[in-house]
Length: 187
Image (cartoon, rainbow, N blue to C red):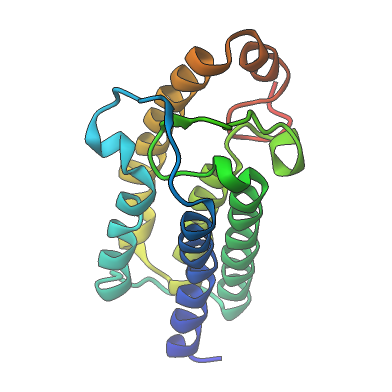
Protein backbone atom coordinates (compact mmCIF):
# COMPACT_ATOMS: atom_id res chain seq x y z
CA UNK A 1 0.00 0.00 0.00
CA UNK A 2 1.58 3.30 -1.02
CA UNK A 3 1.43 6.70 0.67
CA UNK A 4 -1.27 8.07 -1.63
CA UNK A 5 -3.62 5.15 -0.94
CA UNK A 6 -3.16 5.58 2.82
CA UNK A 7 -3.93 9.30 2.61
CA UNK A 8 -7.06 8.67 0.55
CA UNK A 9 -8.19 5.97 3.00
CA UNK A 10 -7.76 8.40 5.92
CA UNK A 11 -9.80 11.05 4.09
CA UNK A 12 -12.53 8.55 3.26
CA UNK A 13 -12.68 7.52 6.92
CA UNK A 14 -13.12 11.16 7.90
CA UNK A 15 -16.05 11.40 5.49
CA UNK A 16 -17.96 8.87 7.60
CA UNK A 17 -18.13 11.59 10.25
CA UNK A 18 -18.77 14.48 7.85
CA UNK A 19 -21.56 12.69 5.98
CA UNK A 20 -23.21 11.58 9.23
CA UNK A 21 -23.25 15.17 10.49
CA UNK A 22 -24.77 16.42 7.25
CA UNK A 23 -27.40 13.69 7.08
CA UNK A 24 -28.46 14.21 10.69
CA UNK A 25 -28.79 17.95 10.14
CA UNK A 26 -31.14 17.31 7.22
CA UNK A 27 -33.15 14.65 9.06
CA UNK A 28 -33.70 16.63 12.24
CA UNK A 29 -35.13 19.67 10.42
CA UNK A 30 -36.00 22.93 12.16
CA UNK A 31 -36.44 22.92 15.93
CA UNK A 32 -37.40 25.47 18.56
CA UNK A 33 -34.75 26.33 21.12
CA UNK A 34 -35.12 25.11 24.68
CA UNK A 35 -31.76 26.57 25.82
CA UNK A 36 -29.27 28.65 23.85
CA UNK A 37 -25.66 28.16 24.85
CA UNK A 38 -23.76 31.34 25.61
CA UNK A 39 -20.39 29.74 24.86
CA UNK A 40 -17.92 31.57 22.63
CA UNK A 41 -18.27 31.05 18.88
CA UNK A 42 -15.17 28.88 18.61
CA UNK A 43 -16.55 26.41 21.17
CA UNK A 44 -19.95 26.46 19.45
CA UNK A 45 -18.35 25.47 16.16
CA UNK A 46 -15.81 22.99 17.56
CA UNK A 47 -16.81 20.13 15.19
CA UNK A 48 -15.76 21.84 11.94
CA UNK A 49 -12.92 23.83 13.53
CA UNK A 50 -11.20 20.72 14.86
CA UNK A 51 -10.75 19.48 11.27
CA UNK A 52 -9.00 22.62 9.98
CA UNK A 53 -5.59 21.60 11.36
CA UNK A 54 -6.08 18.12 9.92
CA UNK A 55 -6.31 19.66 6.45
CA UNK A 56 -3.12 21.64 7.07
CA UNK A 57 -1.34 18.49 8.20
CA UNK A 58 -2.69 16.58 5.22
CA UNK A 59 -1.05 18.97 2.76
CA UNK A 60 2.05 19.75 4.88
CA UNK A 61 2.61 16.60 6.93
CA UNK A 62 6.27 17.09 8.01
CA UNK A 63 6.75 13.37 7.44
CA UNK A 64 8.65 10.92 9.60
CA UNK A 65 9.28 7.27 8.82
CA UNK A 66 7.23 4.51 10.40
CA UNK A 67 7.06 0.83 9.48
CA UNK A 68 4.13 -0.02 7.21
CA UNK A 69 2.62 -2.21 9.94
CA UNK A 70 2.39 0.82 12.27
CA UNK A 71 0.89 2.92 9.50
CA UNK A 72 -1.76 0.26 8.86
CA UNK A 73 -2.57 0.14 12.58
CA UNK A 74 -2.97 3.92 12.42
CA UNK A 75 -5.36 3.57 9.48
CA UNK A 76 -7.37 0.97 11.40
CA UNK A 77 -7.54 3.31 14.42
CA UNK A 78 -8.72 6.15 12.16
CA UNK A 79 -11.44 4.03 10.54
CA UNK A 80 -12.69 2.55 13.84
CA UNK A 81 -12.63 6.03 15.41
CA UNK A 82 -14.66 7.51 12.55
CA UNK A 83 -17.24 4.73 12.81
CA UNK A 84 -17.39 5.18 16.61
CA UNK A 85 -17.93 8.95 16.26
CA UNK A 86 -20.62 8.36 13.62
CA UNK A 87 -22.32 5.81 15.90
CA UNK A 88 -22.38 8.48 18.62
CA UNK A 89 -23.94 11.02 16.24
CA UNK A 90 -26.59 8.59 15.02
CA UNK A 91 -27.34 7.57 18.64
CA UNK A 92 -28.24 11.20 19.34
CA UNK A 93 -30.66 11.28 16.43
CA UNK A 94 -32.68 14.51 16.47
CA UNK A 95 -30.75 15.66 19.55
CA UNK A 96 -27.57 15.99 17.46
CA UNK A 97 -26.32 19.48 16.67
CA UNK A 98 -23.04 21.21 15.96
CA UNK A 99 -23.71 23.99 18.45
CA UNK A 100 -24.21 23.31 22.14
CA UNK A 101 -27.85 24.48 22.13
CA UNK A 102 -30.71 22.36 23.47
CA UNK A 103 -33.98 22.18 21.57
CA UNK A 104 -37.55 21.17 22.28
CA UNK A 105 -37.67 17.40 22.29
CA UNK A 106 -33.97 17.22 23.13
CA UNK A 107 -33.20 14.22 25.30
CA UNK A 108 -30.19 13.18 27.33
CA UNK A 109 -28.85 10.10 25.56
CA UNK A 110 -27.21 7.58 27.89
CA UNK A 111 -27.28 4.42 25.74
CA UNK A 112 -25.17 3.17 22.87
CA UNK A 113 -21.65 4.61 23.00
CA UNK A 114 -22.82 7.02 25.71
CA UNK A 115 -22.75 4.07 28.15
CA UNK A 116 -18.94 4.22 27.99
CA UNK A 117 -18.19 7.94 27.72
CA UNK A 118 -20.27 11.11 27.93
CA UNK A 119 -18.60 12.45 24.79
CA UNK A 120 -17.99 9.56 22.37
CA UNK A 121 -17.92 11.86 19.32
CA UNK A 122 -15.00 13.76 20.82
CA UNK A 123 -13.23 10.53 21.74
CA UNK A 124 -13.70 9.44 18.13
CA UNK A 125 -12.36 12.74 16.81
CA UNK A 126 -9.26 12.73 19.05
CA UNK A 127 -8.48 9.06 18.37
CA UNK A 128 -9.07 9.64 14.64
CA UNK A 129 -6.36 12.31 14.75
CA UNK A 130 -4.01 9.87 16.51
CA UNK A 131 -4.66 7.16 13.93
CA UNK A 132 -4.29 9.61 11.05
CA UNK A 133 -0.98 10.80 12.54
CA UNK A 134 0.38 7.26 12.33
CA UNK A 135 -1.15 6.40 8.95
CA UNK A 136 0.09 9.59 7.34
CA UNK A 137 3.43 9.66 9.20
CA UNK A 138 2.67 13.28 10.01
CA UNK A 139 4.70 15.10 12.64
CA UNK A 140 2.56 18.18 11.94
CA UNK A 141 -0.64 16.30 12.82
CA UNK A 142 0.98 14.85 15.94
CA UNK A 143 1.95 18.31 17.20
CA UNK A 144 -1.40 19.85 16.22
CA UNK A 145 -3.26 17.04 17.99
CA UNK A 146 -1.25 17.60 21.19
CA UNK A 147 -1.35 21.41 21.28
CA UNK A 148 -4.68 22.15 19.59
CA UNK A 149 -7.10 19.22 19.25
CA UNK A 150 -6.78 17.76 22.77
CA UNK A 151 -6.93 21.10 24.67
CA UNK A 152 -9.73 22.37 22.39
CA UNK A 153 -11.67 19.16 23.02
CA UNK A 154 -11.24 19.55 26.80
CA UNK A 155 -12.64 23.11 26.58
CA UNK A 156 -15.61 21.97 24.51
CA UNK A 157 -16.36 19.13 26.96
CA UNK A 158 -16.33 21.52 29.92
CA UNK A 159 -18.62 23.98 28.13
CA UNK A 160 -20.98 21.29 26.85
CA UNK A 161 -21.23 19.67 30.28
CA UNK A 162 -22.29 23.05 31.71
CA UNK A 163 -25.05 23.35 29.09
CA UNK A 164 -26.24 19.80 29.70
CA UNK A 165 -26.24 20.39 33.48
CA UNK A 166 -28.32 23.55 33.00
CA UNK A 167 -30.75 21.77 30.68
CA UNK A 168 -31.07 18.40 32.37
CA UNK A 169 -30.17 19.13 36.01
CA UNK A 170 -30.13 16.09 38.28
CA UNK A 171 -30.52 13.67 35.38
CA UNK A 172 -27.26 14.94 33.86
CA UNK A 173 -25.50 15.05 37.26
CA UNK A 174 -26.35 11.38 37.84
CA UNK A 175 -25.12 10.52 34.33
CA UNK A 176 -21.89 12.48 34.87
CA UNK A 177 -21.39 10.71 38.19
CA UNK A 178 -21.36 7.26 36.62
CA UNK A 179 -19.91 7.84 33.10
CA UNK A 180 -16.48 9.43 32.49
CA UNK A 181 -16.23 12.51 30.28
CA UNK A 182 -13.91 11.14 27.58
CA UNK A 183 -11.85 8.06 28.39
CA UNK A 184 -14.03 4.96 28.93
CA UNK A 185 -13.61 3.23 32.30
CA UNK A 186 -11.44 6.10 33.62
CA UNK A 187 -12.53 6.54 37.21
